[in-house]
Length: 147
Image 1: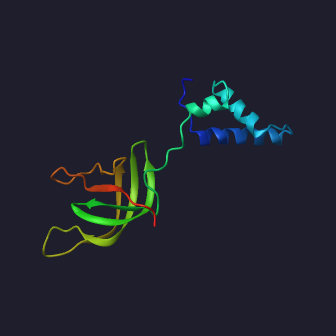
Image 2 (image 1 turned 60 degrees about the horizontal axis):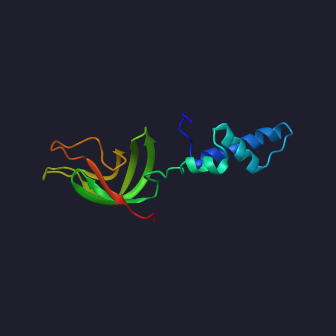
């Protein structure tokens, strides 16, 4: 097989679509027969062989409602993922709602409180944008359990 295999869930969905299409034409096919047919289409001997070759559906790195902590412009924070969207193969666009606003102003003459932050992160939770001293603007310190 020269084409990358989809996940097991995607292969099972192919089998369901095959059964549904055949049912529209009046032909019946058991679920196990549909799985075997999909396995043969992908060049595998049987469903169990194909299933062993295919991977699990990857879980997203971040999900709405997930608790996170980290540093934003050098300030520690805790909060919740308010929005999460995959951006290409290696990046995520997150919107974080902070438990306590973070003052991002360096001046002692005024404040600039941020309660919600939108950022782009790589799979390790680091933003590609950096501060003037070379530190990522946003760094997440791992994942917390959902509330």
